[in-house]
Image (cartoon, protein in one colour):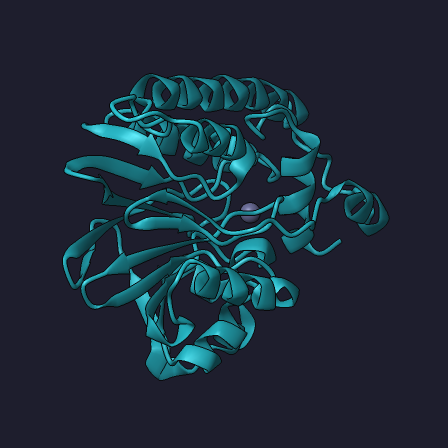
Length: 282
Ligand SMILES: [Zn+2]
C-alpha cells in the first residue's frame, strides 16, 4: 500500500495520544477511509498569533506575523478550500501566506502544499530527506523550495521559527519551535513533527527513540501546537479556552502535559523496539 496512507491509519487507530499501536503496514485503504475523520471543523483562535485552520483529523495552523502569515501543515489537497475559508473567517487574507512549513511529506500534512503554494506564491520549507521522498518536489516549483536543516532559524517579521530535524516517523520529520502570544504573556511552543510509529525496523525505531530523547532535553517548552489535534487534546482545550474567565490560565499552556507526552512516546517506542528486535531475531 501507499505509505502516505499508513500515516493516517496509525494515528486514527491509536489512542488519544495517537501512538499506542502501530499498524502492520498492510491495512487496506477501505479500512482507512472508514476510520479517518475528514469532517471539517470551523477555524478557531488559540493564541493571539495561532489559529487552527485544519480538519478534525489533521491540524493546520496560521501564525500571523508582522510580515504576513506562516502556515504550519496544509491538510490534504481536497481540504484546501476548507483551510482557505478558515483563514478568511479568522480575518486574514490567504494571499498573505509567506511561508508554508509542512512537518513531513505525508499527504495529510503536505497534500495541500501544491495548491496553496500556487495560490499564494509562498515559499515551502521542509527538511531535505522529506523533499527527497517526493517525486518532482511534490509539484512545488524549485524557486519556492526551502531545504531546511536542523537548527535553522527563519525570521518572518517579528516571529522567529527554529527548526529541528526529528526523524523517525519519516526520515525528514521536522519540528518547529516558536513563541506564542496571549495578551502580554509569551510562551515557548513546539509543533512536534510526527509521532506515529507506522514504520518498521530496528534502526528506524532507534532513530525515533533518539529523537524523543533529544526533544526531552529541550528547555523552556510550555505549549504543544500538535499537528494532530488528538496528540494534545486540542479540541478539549479549545472548549476550555472558550469558557476561560479573565485571569485564568491559558489551557494550552501545560508544560507538564508536554513532558508526559514525551514519556508516552518513549514508552510506546521502547515497546516497539522490543517487537522489532524479536522480529529481526535479535
Ligand atoms: Zn505522517
